[in-house]
Length: 461
View 1 (tube, rainbow, N blue to C red):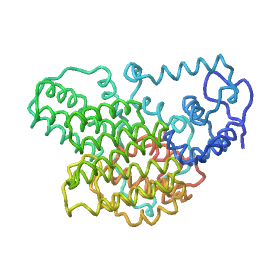
View 2 (cartoon, rainbow, N blue to C red):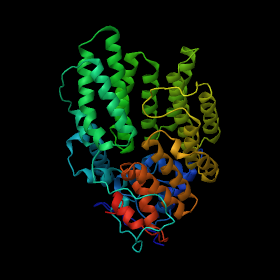
View 3 (cartoon, rainbow, N blue to C red):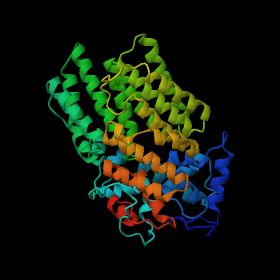
View 4 (tube, helix red, strand yellow):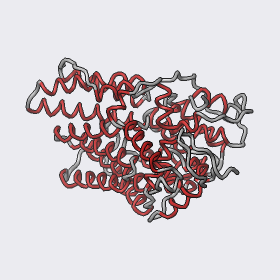
């Protein structure tokens, strides 16, 4: 085992270090102790990826290494970097991640995604030997998906907005419903192209209205930005902060509880991904409590958004390692679903309040807690065919793939990954899913069809 891999950056360390041991010791020294799954969540990678870094089997790209150092309070000196080099690197990282440069820097679409999220996977050589598709892996094969950047146009429009004419509210509602359908069907490239025009038109319409009509326009804007936030989170884009903030501002201006709850949820997700998991839990639980306080007889949409807040809070607590809070909030979310009338149409955009949804979240919660064995029962109780959208079914297969991967079962991991592609091909190209695919490809196991799957979904470049 190599104890010191060269850092992939033009500025090399000034002395040899055991990078894996340094990261592992600082992670274990956190109070409470940070698990590999929790560190991976903050970085957008899996626990298995963190394990390989700590074993010196791979070295993170420079920008990810800087992020690890920030999370674990590792100084440049401990990384063996001269102070002058550290200053230069800090400047490069700050400049690279500034909002202005998110739209100003133009690279090829697939390259933009790979550089930001999972290029340690993309740039390595994959193990050969996997060929054909075995009959035991029964998920049907989806057609190859062309490389696309689902958020490039959206990011540019956020910082360089274009003018659009106002339109009747009914037309805005139709456009918003179409955008929601694109998200639920996991047509992310289409959604990314259409959202900027929808947002611009909705904002122009709001500016032309007064009274309750203006409040309605605010709600449409908020939900358009919620969809934008969901999209940028899936792409691991820093623009998620911008879209979530704008969603919450517009939702509060609308005065409507459901958009406020939906916007608070996506903002909390952005907070969690930046390492502020406990603050995210606090925001989510406070918002859920306010819905209870303000609505003694809550409507179905209010109950549904409350459930979604509790489920996201439970997962966020799991990411921070707080098992007790995570499981308590998950229990509370399940109780909230029982208050809903049967077959209620909530009209929420991204999640539903059902027992299936609660079981789905339980899988992710136990993955984050590092107890994937406890998620098996929930994976078996959750029938993906009963999940309402391709996006949610893909989430089920993604979480079960992570579960089996943590449990060391590559065959079931690959079966689940193929389930992702079968239900939502663009989900299979998400950075986190491509990382998981690549980790499976790196392993010593040989699975028929794995190499082709990696190539088809963009994990093998």
